[in-house]
Amino acid sequence: MTTTPIHLTRGDGKGLAQGTLGLWGSTVIGLASTAPVYSLVATLGWVVLAVGAQAPIAFIVAFLPMLFIAFAYRELNREIPDCGTTFTWGTKAFGPWVGWMGGWGVAVAGMVVLANLSQIASIYFWALFGLSFENNDWRVILVAVAFIAAMTWVSWRGVEIGEKIQNLLLAIQYIALAVFVVAALVQFFAGTAPNPTPFDLEWMNPFAFTSWSGFTQAVLLALFIYWGWDTCLALNEETKDPKRTPGAAALLTCVILLVTYVGVTVAAMMYAGLGEDGTGLGNEANADDFFLAIRDGLLGPFGWVLVVAVLISAVSSTQTTILPTARGTLAMGVYRALPAKFKDVHPRYRTPSFSTLVMGVVASAYYVGMTLVSDNILQDSILSLGLAIAFYYAITGYACVWYFRRELFTSVNAFLVKGLMPLLGALMLTYAFVQSAIDMWDVDYGYTVLFGIGGTFVVGIGSLLIGVVLMLVWFLFPRAKRFFRGESLNRDTPVLVPDEPGDLIRSVDGGI
Image 1: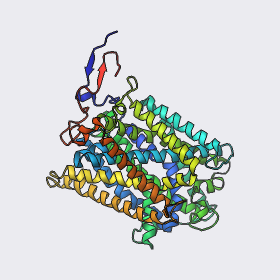
Image 2: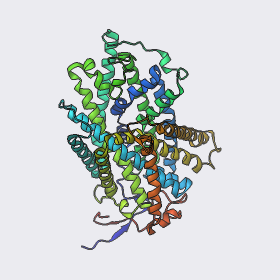
Image 3: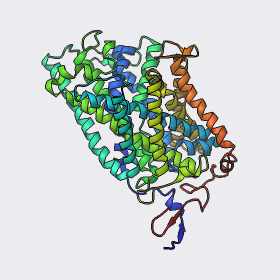
Image 4: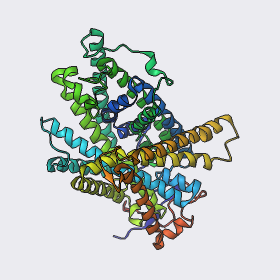
């Protein structure tokens, strides 16, 4: 049958399923991306070891750069609701080279965290059956890859089905956290907690930190647990109000996370105290998984609830982490920053089909390869994740200030939300990046030593430098010329329009 191709119009954008998500759906996906239960499990103990009783205020201080950058995302999204987010905004503000590296930062962070989340999901899956294996055991690897494959399929299948699944998974996570908080407080007030510690306002004193290095370490750790809220913005072209809903969802997500993390931290401190032995939060043996250390004492025969919550949290975030990276590479394909295949959209599900599948395959290959070579190097790559996060968040903050530079002094509100706050957030994250890199140089920082320096530094900085190499290689291809000359994407490129009118066509039978 002969079909008549129809050029996509400005309203068709990149061919994604428009009008799928509302404010609540976007917020749910933003929350799920941060994996609140797992993030607390992986971070709380280490933050307490770094700053002791100042852990709650450390989470609040770390919230500030996230909030400031969230405003940058909101303002840029109102002007440029493009699923490429940092890639698109960085290119419009600073040109193709900075924009390409911003997109690479998003991709690196997604790939590394997918490997981590799938491994955690697999470990907790086996823990449900009372089994424990080494991280590089074939059974752990097999189940981890299966989780990546399953969540890649969900992401490929469509945002709507993903949203429905995430509603359920997020509800389970927050029910588990509520059970944890209630049980901890009940035992505290009943005097049956292992080390009842009354709440002290000093826990919220930002001037009570006794060690600058401990303070910076705690804030850097806390930055990790907030990361992921920007998934709301990567789905902007698929929301019911692309210019407003994603930004509102991002801010709402950040606030909910702040309340969650501070509330759980305070309850944990009141229940377990800060002791260096037993179930105390100051016990380094509990730092990798505080919930695992206290689950039986806190919930007795229902301790498995916390295991299920961590498993679900990791699986949930595995799916939502695929979304922003796939849409980022979709945008890069549309604007000629990547091969044309990356701009393929599934004709029925309206998802970035090729980009999603590539994300799943690359994450699986990276995870299996790193695990088989050395699980310690994999762990170092996870520790270095903060570098990629701080890198592309900072680019977004600076891009906001520069893009709106002519509007900053038109009103107080414009100065604050388009200038001052994004700039402060970007500067904070730049400092976090530099300080992290300095700390990671130390051979004692992570699990490995490479080339006589900390393996975490080599992996973290090296992964960003690989992006520079790939960018230069892509520069040599004919398709890349229009992008690097600033023709396919620049400040004046219309919002939601392919790089050229004939690039995306839709047949009357629905094929693309």
